Image (cartoon, rainbow, N blue to C red; front, side):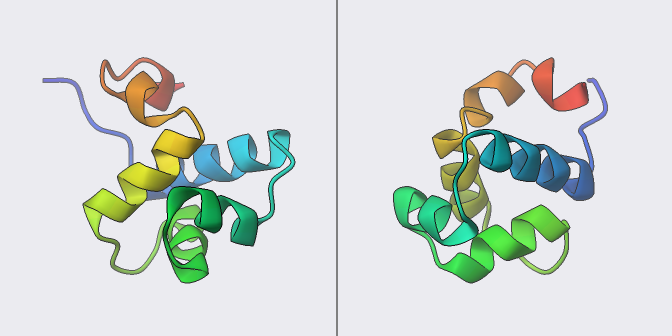
Length: 75
């Protein structure tokens, strides 16, 4: 099994994609149906996140499906 990216790496990717999409953290949280603090914690790669909430955020950004095969999340 390939090594999974760290939470910090996933958070950096999420932040980069959010900024590229010109979304605020609050807008992203609303689109994903999660609290603003969830987006902040994910982007920082810190704290305790519920996997389902992190996956919702990554899904809105188009990163959840890309990460299923591990290719994009490792870049």
